[in-house]
Structure formats: structure tokens, C-alpha cells
Length: 132
Image 1 (cartoon, rainbow, N blue to C red):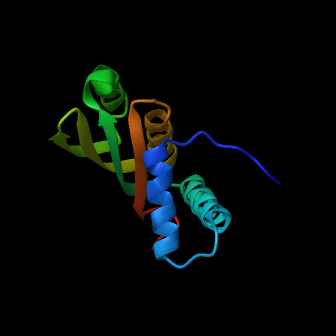
Image 2: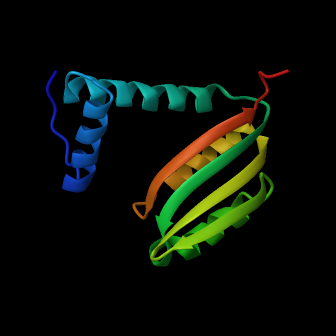
């Protein structure tokens, strides 16, 4: 199946350098692997149940989202233990340390991913209801 994507030139150039440095034989192969990793990450988050401990790390454009981000953090304060915030010019990097119901942490992650001003959201489940 063929498809087309709108990707910024700089991101595509970096992607090409990366897959070539890894010795893959095509951009298509690299995209299939990237898509598979994305799907697997989603499934891990969806399968989590019970009480989880997790870190949610994301970057964003400060001025475009800060008010909405504060509202979200207040909305999910029962699952957020603490946050760490670092400024890098107009961009910010934030780490949220969570402990609470898997469904609530999942909702927090999906809310953050819904903003155009958020560059990327990375989730690490440290413990979930499936772990001893």
C-alpha cells in the first residue's frame, strides 16, 4: 500500500540519516519499524490496568500551551505526584511523575498528545497492575 505524508524537511533529513546510519536498506523499511514501535507503545499503555507508576515526558512551545497545561495538571492532580520543568528558549521540556489508576494516566497522556504545541509525548510505565 502506498501513502503520502507531510513531514517537515528537517525531520525527514534526520530520519534518512538515522535509518542509513543503522544500515537499513530503505526508507520504507525504517517507516514500517517506526510505525510498529508506535503501535506497540500504544498497546502497552492500553493494556495497563490497576494502579500504575509512570513518567510522562513531553516538549512543547511554552507560550502556546502553558495555560491549557496548567488546567490539565490541575484536572489530573490526583494522579500527578510531581513535575519537573526546564526551559530551552521558546520550547520547554516537562517530566510528570504519576501514580494512580491506569485509566487516568492514559487519559492524561492522550490529552497531552492532542495539542499541536506539544512536540512529542513519551511514556514509561514503571509499574502496572500486571507487575508483581
